[in-house]
Length: 124
Image (cartoon, rainbow, N blue to C red; front, side):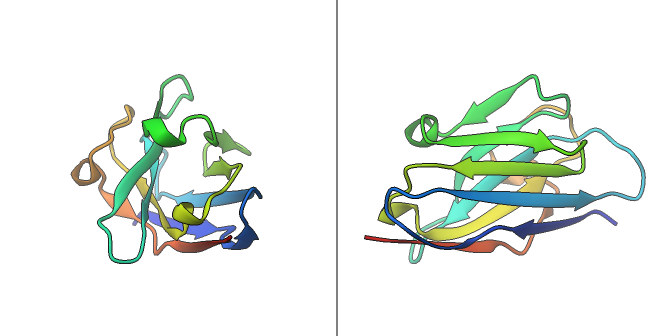
């Protein structure tokens, strides 16, 4: 069974940085793309960034591209989201998601597995 566990969330002042991590555990080695989504209070969940299995293809939500970076560190089991120049509107629960296909997608329903989420709060 695939499990995803997010970490790294917390409270940060506007202009600060946070690094989220998504630890993925799969029963067998299988290539799959990983993405980050977020859901702010009272809003629908939205796409943030995604990358493919090999680290060759990346997708970003346009408004976050200059501030957020998705990467795979420490082998293929952890995917990070580095968030810089954070704004109060970045406050949300951030979710990690994985699909059974190597190529990334912006669509939520393209992903097969989801983590429980980690809270990010940016104070003004």
